[in-house]
Image (cartoon, rainbow, N blue to C red; front, side, top):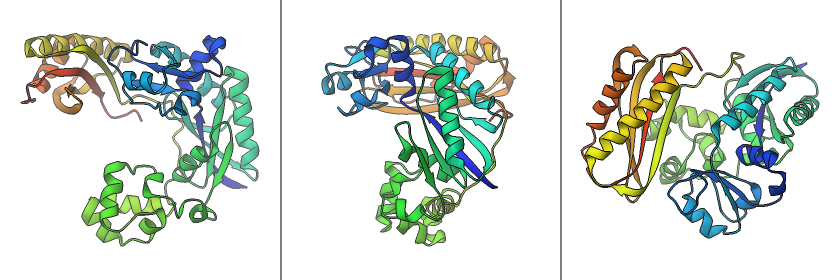
Length: 343
């Protein structure tokens, strides 16, 4: 039997959970984000496939989503509901007996030794469907990279196998952005080197790419373009690396004394999350989005891991003090990063 890696990706997860709770929304464009009011500031957390046809996607401002798809149903984010359903999905996956690596709310890697990975993929889909009524897409590969990319080709609710045999026939002529880890900036840097397609990157000189993109990222990207990557899975339950809270303000905050108060409020919320995790924080990061839409972050490392409210507050203010730009603020966030030990 052959060892396979399968990437399980729940289709339009957050929107799908909302439709399960509100069956009358099935088939309609659904957008989830913020407090559900598209007239207010906020960004889209997810959109149903029907809404995506209008150009609505995660990260898009809610107001823009409303302009693109005025007939959409807008709903607030309900984190507790998504976490509960995600837990059901991961339990259903582990009940199958395969090595399962939980990657968060809506995706996981599964390892299986089999001569028929498609049969395993269909078994996974049926198991999830029976447990939660949710659809999933499954990518099959010889390693994590192949399986992760394959699941994108499997959407929606399908199965796709991507291996060294069909890697270049499927991806060779596609732009480098088709690869995991290649965003707009990286794609642009590669294009400046004459590297436009996946095949170009696979054939590129590793030293040249490393010189342009760094000694770690450069070689890794070339290896990825060749379809090479790790196949090992970790069976331990997923453990978040951080907990964060953020707020988008309906009116820009110009008074930085008020910014300070808001950071403290968010720090208190994060402290409650840290205490609930029962894992001490190692570093506190503050995110500031200035008007109109420029975002930057600064962090402050704690002297020692802590869950104490005053320590986290002090660290949040220390991080805030590193911001020298005092332009009006439209969003603030505070993140606690945990000690190493979880995935």
